[in-house]
Amino acid sequence: MTYFDSEDFLEKDYSEAPLPKGQYEYCTFSNCHFANSDLSDIKFLECSFRDCDLSMVNLDQTAFREVTFQNCKMLGLQFQDCNKLVLKMRFEKCLLNLSSFFGLDLKSTSYTDCQLEEVDFAQADLEEALFENCSLRGALFEKTNLGKADFRTSLHFRIDPEVNNIRKAKFSMQGLPGLLEKYNIVVE
Image (cartoon, rainbow, N blue to C red; front, side, top):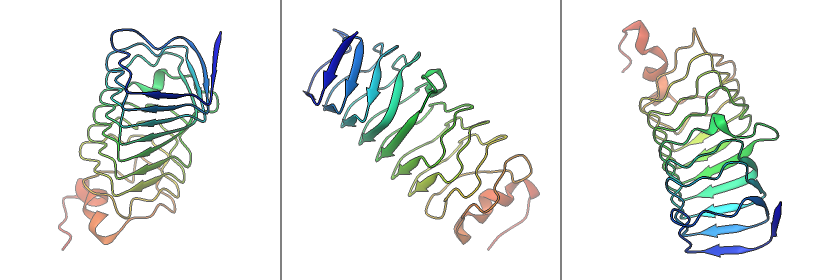
């Protein structure tokens, strides 16, 4: 296995020539294009991706451990295919529409200023997750653990309290319609 340590990858296009398989530790990827490429079986440990396009990337057994994504386009990613051992990510100003986190352990994951529309969070463990200034229009929450999650500054979510654990989750008054929609009541 090839090992990369503390390297900076700048403005690379991996959609034509794929990223070499291996382990990347403390590496930074800036302005790189990965769209439709294959990142399967690659390990990223304490890496950061900035201003990258990772849309429709194959994530089969990809390991993300303490990885930060900033200002990245990440459409249609199947995160549930990742290596689940010590999966830990943070997202800032990312476009994650149509992605899936189905059934994943995402405790304390932070999503800041992200667009998470039509994202599948069914059966995921999002205990203590932070959704700060996020748009969650059409996101699926079903049998999801949202205990102590923070939605106070996020919008457009619909969460059914009867099929999700929302114990001690935080919501603002503007978020109440997203919790009560199924009851067909009006909140003013």
